[in-house]
Image 1 (spheres, protein in one colour):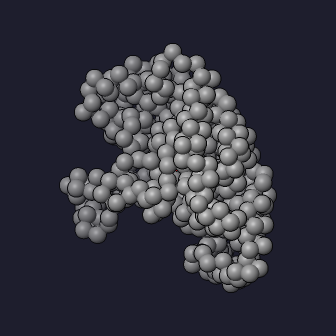
Image 2: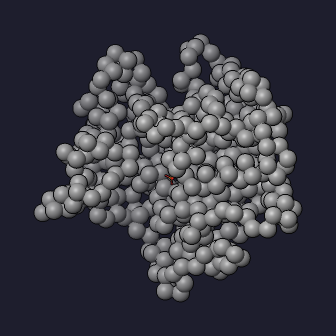
Length: 447
Ligand SMILES: Cc1ncc(COP(=O)(O)O)c(C=O)c1O
């Protein structure tokens, strides 16, 4: 019955991050409906969605409050822009609300439509800031190995995964790489967590000194790296990073595209790790994926430099037609109402503790698994690297994921590492977590 749609897909839809030649043979998996934490495909089969879409459906699927807000807004004002001092009223309300929730010292937000474009905007703002500050040589951006910051042109260079560079003539100049932060990945098994943190900080400091602090504009990182392997920083890492950046007068751009809006058990990952960013990027959980919307936030200090300089320059030359789209703003407001009305942050913290506990008890003990790591409602499950090394061609994580799919669980294997990611809607119940874990265990047994 669905074959015409499958043929149509093969004939016309170019899928991102897909093995397109294989896809051309096997065809799409078509999702038609969703509610809460469950998806339904075109054959009527139901799945638990362990990744909330792509780490974004924080309040769950099918929320009537958001659907109603979108219907009301599209009748009242379906579109207006924010260029030339114009703006939809609701966009101001969302800006005010996000800035007041955001960590110190965030002061202004410019909206975008995706995590990638919002990161690109922040990178441009960093370069602009240093030009206005009279230090045009201070332009390089340091990101970490296995970082994921998106795939538009500049930001692809910030992303440190080979797939996104291969054959695209990237990365562009101005980007430098320091080590990923994941204690499980330390090269010396005897190293304590404190010594590991020191080694990461020393790598960062050495890179800055070798390049010359006068050439480094910013350090850009996710509080917990998501798509690169769910890499939870070791103790003292963020404190140490911020000291080094201060010492060298380097800005901190925190990419909160995954971690913002409850994922780590606080409103922002910055709150969880006590980070004071100079710039911050948000997307996904801002609207829980109901409408594409993102934001680039900047500190009071950066904003004041812009205000002064643009007395003479005049027009700030950057923006997207859909920066601050009223439907995105309506979805964002209704989404944040749900957070407030349902105490979703506290719920995420409590259910997150349960999720981490069950993963440690039920999954870490499985003979296929080497590590389970995470924080509240984000987790990574890593296949034992010794097993992977012994059988490099077996694609263990994708196989586990495929069997889970047959059993009714969507779980995503991350690119070029043997890690399965979990970041469910924050409204998931403990019994739904039990169901998810039971399917995952069955799949691990079968593999
Ligand atoms: C941390 C992080 N930054 C940026 C992005 C890019 O966001 P988008 O896919 O909306 O462009 C992602 C996407 O997963 C992400 O995880």
